[in-house]
Image (cartoon, rainbow, N blue to C red):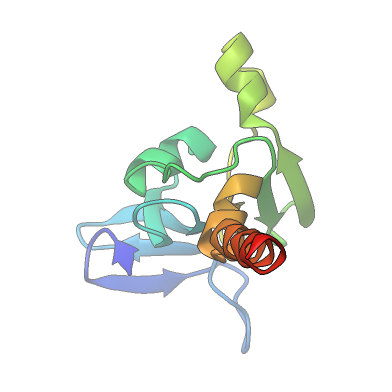
Length: 148
């Protein structure tokens, strides 16, 4: 799902065959870029955002409908796409520090084709696998067998 205008065309000043466009010109003409958000948000997917807009994790979380209750803010991963400046790699961000201090300088801006991954908390992972339920069921079974 791409949020934004349904009519888009690819734009990349240095594009050659096999290259992914880093910027898109939408209709009406606005220079936009794609950013992705996966994981524990209400509407994960790919979003078109105006290139002139300063986009960070907070903005993208808002566009994606906000986090789920099981979102882990201590270890948000940004997969930085290789861009014109040659920046590529993986960045880990602790949003809990932002919520405590309120310091925006700790939050990196997003670039074209970046992907933000919001993982589940430890308890969220346990709940999603029904692990707690299975362990409690096992303990109850052992109790019933031994105290039968």
